[in-house]
Image 1 (cartoon, helix red, strand yellow):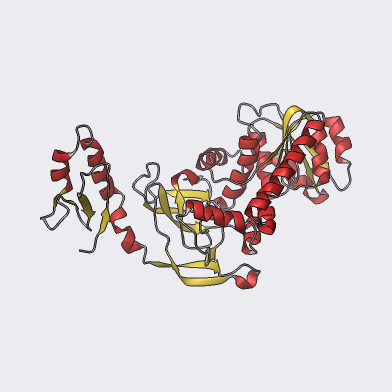
Image 2 (cartoon, one colour):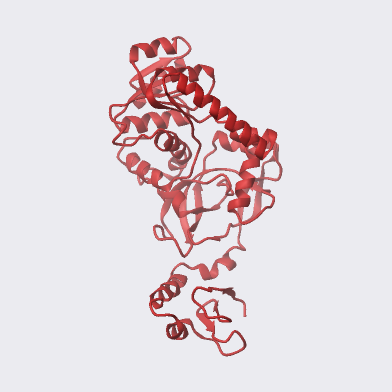
Amino acid sequence: MNSKTYRTQQYLRPRQRYVITRCNVYVDTAGNNSPLQCLRCVFMRRLPQGLEENIHHVHERLYSTGTINVQRKSRRRMKAWQIHQYGGNEELVLSTEARVPEIKKPKEILVEIHAASVNPIDVVMRGGYGRTIINQMRTWLGGGPGSEFPLTLGRDFSGVVTQTGHGVTRFKPGDEVWGALAAQRQGTHSQFCVTSEDEISKKPTSLSHIEAASIPYVATTSWAALVTCGEMSEQKARDKRVMIHGGAGGIGTFAIQLMKAWGAEVVTTVASDAVPLVKHLGADHVIDYRTQDVMEELKGIGKLDLVLDPVGGEETERTLARLRPYHHYVTLVMPLLPDADKHGLIPGLARSALNLNYNLAKGITNGLASYRWAFFMPNGNALKKVAILVDAGKTI
């Protein structure tokens, strides 16, 4: 019999098992060659009192999600841009025989990708950036060690749900969704990807797939910096003064819009040619770092409640001194990944810890400011809130 066997010790007596075939769910009540009987007919008589409803739910869920045919569907092939070793653009190969990824966990979702973007992180990952820690994450979260190659790059996507795991409750086939994949997953420069229910949300109805695919990575990275590390929220941000370095970049343009949508006063630094752009996005104070002294301009603006630094460098860190006491300087430039790549996992972690402690001490000496690192994290809940702002015309 061409079937897949699931052993569920929490429901079965010793030597009992149930088998999922193409059409029905059965149980072999003796664990040998006795006739197979329907799961519902046999289990309801043998389960401890109170578990019948759970088994009934599993029985129905197995039919409703289509997981019985996952093994057959996984044999399909797709197109994907892949690399077989780290390097430059010459390593990119368009494969027409890449395997459509499988759903392996109850909360996972298979998405047909309609559009994907290219971010700077995709370019540096092509060259091996972060491979030491990311491969360790693949080992911890992906079921065991193994080569990452062939590796599909890409984090952002917008597409349509085609299949769901039996634990998914918020999405169904046909839903239009958007998201940004975790670094340990195979990427989105392909026709299909597997993601998690917690990593995605319904895409904004006002955007096309192409437009939507340009937002999730910068949105979730900005959210991690401003909300998770910076402790801002729609309620807390009102009337706060937030400085955003590099306001014309991907992170900067989104961060400006998010803070303005939440009622903050926004200060930003840009080059001369980007001044009109950030003013159009709503920035209240625009400092041209090529023609103006940033620190002198900040003296006239006043103390800051939060600084977001996606750029790095000594010049931007000088703004630590302009923070109110016990407020946060959040940087997206952290040495953890390159340190691990250069020195190895444990020595790299140790060097990064020393670097962080040094910067924490520097923040304390600059008016008791808090120095924090932020990094991209998939966040479906954040994307859901961003989609509401997009459809309301508060971000673009």
